[in-house]
Image (cartoon, rainbow, N blue to C red; front, side, top):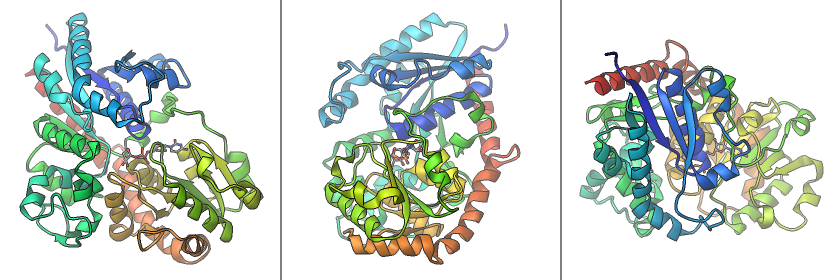
Length: 457
Ligand code: UDX
């Protein structure tokens, strides 16, 4: 009897910044001859602009089956609330467990395995009950992974939980070049230890140590030392940036949870490189004070800008009148399309990892204003290590005068030219990694080979 075909079971973590790379991972797996069952939570399914996000890839011959699972809450439940996540953290695995059990029973001729976002913390209980291989997908830089992975080592050195305002060097994590504790993720700091995010991350990093394979949405050449050091402990594969994998765009999958405003006509009227794109991602909002200072700073400056604002209630009244045709505020857009537009010359970003990768890919220098999670650590990579971005402000406070000076200098002075030179080198690594002989392609193929061998064994 022939070998059974691999069957990836994938339940998406319900956040835009996770859905996008995870969706792309599903297509990539299917393009390697693996059957994929892709599951969205019901409430996410109801937000999607199209009823089946995978109909195009399926028409092109990929075997991706799409379905939904309930999180046990009514569709209109407030999911911003920590209680929701507390409940998901404790109980959601039971629903997944039932779902996976039924799915496996209905497909006896396939060889199932579980692919989860590293931050969805139920991988082990579900996989072990059904005797499945575990693939963990990490959507942030390897540096962040390594720091969270080595939390016990940080503890031994007095850096976990790290006192909030202490600035000391971390120079003892294999593969991590010396860095300051101020750049640690906030959930590793004392003030962050009571948060649910802290508990989720801690649990996630207990779980990931039991994974059979770990996929990273990064590029080996960008973070080679960190990845090599991790590889000495567990099998890690850098396969990013997954969103730009060859032929993916041909499948026309909609990944956005909100409808996208078309900015191209507005951008067309602007000179090349003159527009600052401003976005703080999909789910964290900068505080009203910060939004106000940035808004006033942009008014004082001379730059043109596109600003993505999910809720624009925090914008100062009269802001739209003051900026007139110099600024465009939209609730959501196709970010990659905007970053690829020749009119865009800079990105004021919160440093979410997808945004950083997209900016690097499109050759757009960044002004960084990290909000939370991995973003302060990502900022260090962008500004201090790779020198492809600058900080929006040097202290913790954002002042409108500083915003205005920084953005003017960034968009019109020599700053962005210097950053662009570095971007060329970094961007080339990303593009090269996805060539047919590039490292990410090779790593993905190696992963599929190793996976198939383990499934067969
Ligand atoms: C968080 C973490 O900080 C990040 O590192 C992790 O990978 C995901 O969760 P998030 O706030 O979601 O980040 O930001 P980011 O990672 O940048 O992802 C946002 C995504 O939304 C990007 O892919 C971006 O292209 C997309 N986006 C954003 C749009 O498509 N349109 C918009 O208008 C704004």
